[in-house]
Amino acid sequence: MLVGMAMPAPSQGDDLGRALTATFYGLVQRMKQDSARRAAEWDMSVAQVRALYALREPLSMRELAERLYLDPSNLTALVDRLEELGLVERRADADDRRVKRLVITPKGSRLADEIIGAVFDKTALFDVLGTREQRQLLDLLTRLVDAPPP
Image (cartoon, rainbow, N blue to C red; front, top):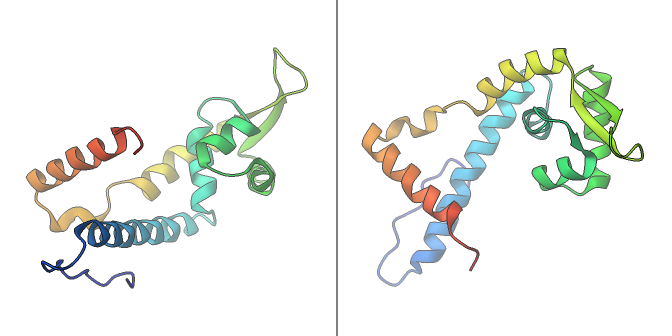
């Protein structure tokens, strides 16, 4: 499916599960593109914005990698960039000096407040649905997220 193109409704012979998955994937791709465009307005990536959001509490590199679903080795460049911008600091853990905690700076906190709202705020994408439909969609998606893995 191409992003921005509507998925046709499944016919009787189509696999409904496949149509749901493809349609949902297309929706997620549109949301990712929109978030990336918004983050780029601050010269940041979506992953960097997500890291700022996660770092509202001090985390180790491993904990941050787990929250962002990234390999810790891939996180180093991202954290280096946030540190260069003065948005986070690496500090020794009070309980284990071998562990470095990532701590958001006051500058990082101010930027996070501004950018997180702009990047992840309600998108116009959902405006095609009425308020009742949006609530129904939220309920259905919440059920999917909260369901135990198959």
